Length: 95
Image 1 (cartoon, helix red, strand yellow):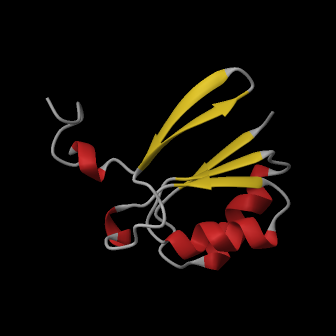
Image 2 (cartoon, helix red, strand yellow):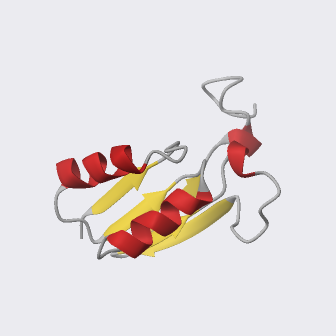
């Protein structure tokens, strides 16, 4: 299984298209926030499952969680944008 990770697309569907082209065949896309609608675009246009979480620019949209645990090929992946863990304040997150 090949997993693609993308984040902070901020409505730039051309950048999404370029990332998809460069990535090649992907079975699962993880969109780590900042523009929920971009994850919907990715899901609608490309033939792969998409799991997404809300980022700091997605405030107020309660339809998407801020964190998600994704199971893939026997592995668990913790998906989050990072803003609720203070990742910009320290390379160690919330200490």
